[in-house]
Amino acid sequence: MFTVFYLLSSYLVGSLSAAILVCRALGKGDPRGVGSGNPGATNVLRAFGKGPAAATLAGDVLKGFLPVVLAGGLHLTATTVAAAGLAAFLGHLFPIFFAFRGGKGVATLIGVVFGYDLRLGCGFVLVWLLMAAITRYSSLAALTATALAPAFVLGLGLPLPEAAALGLMVIAVFWRHRENIQRLRSGNEGRIGARKG
Image (cartoon, rainbow, N blue to C red):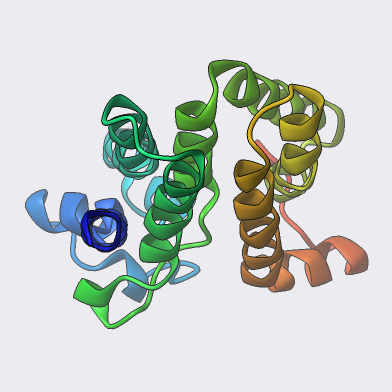
């Protein structure tokens, strides 16, 4: 019974949209109504600047990180720890507090992988930075790092439930980025640092 309660709580934590809460607190309005309409740090950066974007990123990472770390601290099973990360991630994608209109999930996934294992998180960020430097496509960097995350779990000898949970997150992230993938294929995706003319 406690496991069910904990996973539900993890989902509710994930449902706290940092982008919406930060922008409301700063009097910026709803980020879902500007730019791409995505309640995430990238859209907040483009619409409202670096400060709100940094706060959004920190909030989205923390809500993936904290449920996983706390589950480990409570000595819950490996399956429950893995599921707590998945529940927080799904809360971000489908937030009950905001009409189930959530973000694309990468920042929260970063928090989850750091919660699973520091080495896994560092590997994720390293791949992202490397791909971003090479291609200058933020979306491609995120997709590449996400796709490799389950393999990193196996390579590091981490619990198999974490690989399974991440496998589901990979599918969800790619689905959420389907428009970015289409733009990448057509050559219309915006590059990091590129100015819109």
